[in-house]
Image (tube, rainbow, N blue to C red; front, side, top):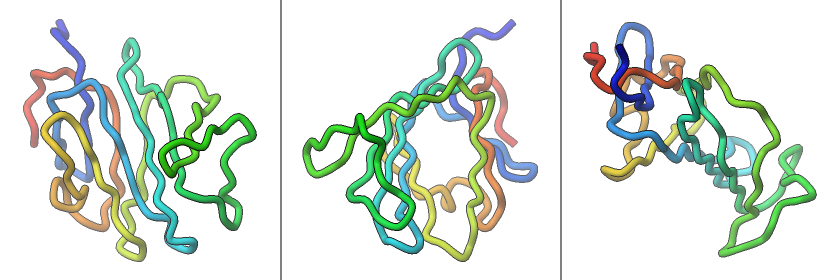
Length: 130
């Protein structure tokens, strides 16, 4: 029986279960050099994208019409359903991701192997990391 759900990251055979139900994923767009942020939470057994933020618009990356400008960011709530998982390319050809949760922020490549695709998903908090 699952006692509680946490957010997990998996790359290849390595899995890291984070002691949290919410994270912020951030990165810088490789062409426009524009910061992006997304806030995820666990809803039932899936991930739910609560809010997204973008610093400015650029080629093919305009915020949606309902976005609100606040504190130097365009804030909006993406209209997508809950997700079983989020796949991150984690390419060595672009800047890396940063993952933030209650213990602070960490570069993804310091948590899991670099240049390996990463899967973000809900997992049993008591699961053992590989």
